[in-house]
Amino acid sequence: MSRPSTKRAAFWVASGILLSRIAGLIRDRIFAHFFGNSDAADAFKAAFRIPNFLQNMFGEGVLSASFIPVYASLLARGDEARARRTAGAVAGLLALLMSVLVLIGVLATPWLIDVIAPGFSGEKRELTIRLVRVLFPGAGLLVLSAWCLGILNSHHKFFLSYTAPVIWNLAMIATLIGFGSGREQYPLAVILAWGSVVGSALQVLVQLPTVLRLIPDLRLSLGRGDSDVRGVARGFVPVFISRGVVQISAFVDALIASLLPTGAVAALSYAQTLYTLPVSLFGMSVSAAELPAMSSAAGTAPDAAEALRGRLDSGLRRIAYFVVPSAVAFLALGDVIIAAIYRTGVFGDKDVLFVWGILAGSTVGLLASTLARLYAATFYSLRDTRTPLKCAVVRVALTTALGYVCAVYLPGWLGLPARWGVAGLTVSAGAAGWVEFALLRRGLNRRLGRTGLPLSYLARLWGSAVAAGACGFAIHRLLASWHPIPAAVLILAPYGGIYLLVTALAGVPEAHGVLAAARRFAGLDGKVV
Image 1 (tube, rainbow, N blue to C red):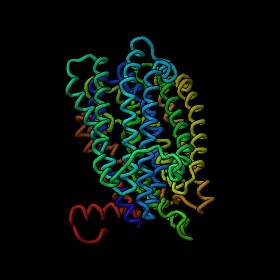
Image 2 (tube, helix red, strand yellow):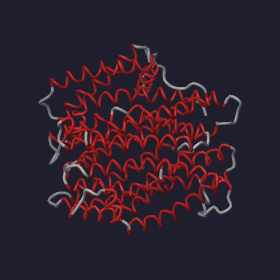
Image 3 (cartoon, one colour):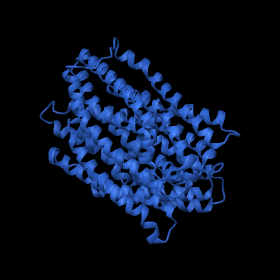
Image 4 (cartoon, one colour):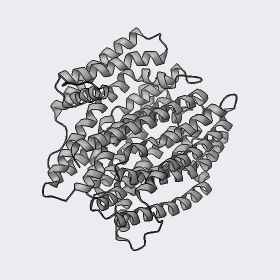
């Protein structure tokens, strides 16, 4: 597959993710309107983390790393019959496994709450238990949605798989709008959980017709004795453990946040929604587009290492070009973004500042975490799932140790209220993310040769972003009394435009690529200068 093709694929992935993230932000804005940073908000956000463990453990990340390399390579060799058998076996195994785990999860919910949110008690704890039991089946459905994504991505049908979550978000939005007015927060949280389950089912159903057209005569099985299924399983186990380690880190964050005053869990969730936006839009889009191409090409020619290195470096540049200004925007203009999205109803100015502090902490490791996704995807294309696992273990160990100290002790040392400890969690996670990134890069450099971004390139990006951020901050000061939504438009649009202009003047190729794409989209001819 040519590099331009993967760029187009990345564009479709990013477009799909953008639509789903916009729907998610709208959902969160409506959620914030009704729940703010209340006990009910803490309970719902904590409850959603627990069954979401299934989705993250068995879903997109694990299947992309273990299933797509095997399935895509079979398609590349033209062996559609074996590919179809493998797809049916993986689907059957997932369906069986999810059914068992959902049942166990529903029965074991009270014990899970004691482990994950020990700081919850009384009605707040009981609400969390009830919500988890409702949400568990929906998480199982989302794992099957991730199987659909693996099929669609391997056939280069990227847009549908990444826009499907829009349906899930719309179901939750409709639930909040339809049932939110005049209803108490606790019963509304339960109704919203059922809306989430309905949305999960719709997310699977919207993808199935296309999946079944791509693999007609699909037959579910358990894949006993199938060598290709064993290949998927061999890749699945290390990635599963790696994802498990990462999820342990997420649960540790939630556990520590549950020990902090009311609002910490919900505020952390609001900040993470924004933090993961550039990670998904740019890190996930490029990685998802490159993984099938890398998996098809890796090891098929003497120059495979050079080809992989070229793809990796090109992808790193594309990711960094968009993530660097995202980090600066979160740090300098985070209150603008948060107010435009969340400041409504019971979510007030103090909540904006609190979430901004947490989001600012996440900028420490935003670039490292996003670039690490592509490094991990390159290892997966080489059928090496153990190296990313080892690096993830190191990162999680550091995050846990640093997170506890920064969350529990650092606010007291600095004379800050205890709830600001949640910002320490994001700072510590960012520092650990840089360690993981360095380990991944060193490991891949040993196999492929030198990879990475030149310091001169990063200096141009950071310098351009800081210049744009200074202009955006000045505009922000002038529009301080404006309504947050129009103010955000008038601040962020010039910020992005100035960054694009300065990087173009600095000779950054990706800037000229963006300008050329914009001209093509607008139907204009001529060269970009």
